Length: 104
Image 1 (spheres, rainbow, N blue to C red):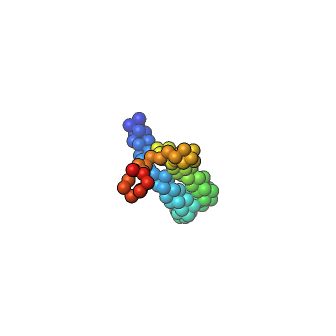
Image 2 (image 1 turned 90 degrees about the horizontal axis):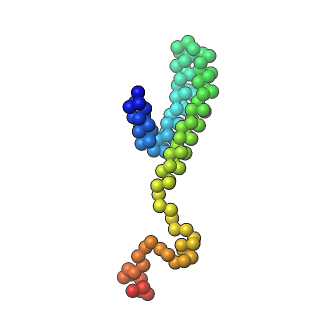
Image 3 (image 1 turned 60 degrees about the vertical axis):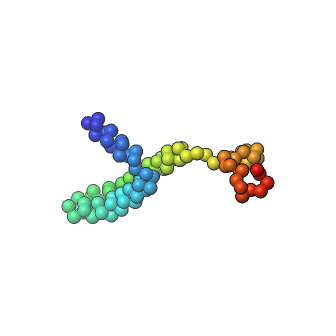
């Protein structure tokens, strides 16, 4: 069982933020429209109303996961140069190229 949970955690960690957004859209459509129609066809008309109410909750869950993934992915990036670095004249670029006549 623990190997299965590690596999699920590994799968969830590989899904990008936009994957969760797509799952939110698909989950909403399925739970709001498809699942209630299937419940009515199976003879569970009362269940169809419950599924229609459950759709926004599932969508919000997936969108929160997308936001968390987007925030986590942004933490690995290098921060851009701040205003204090521009004032001090510091730069990561090499300005001694031949196309700049005043700097040799």
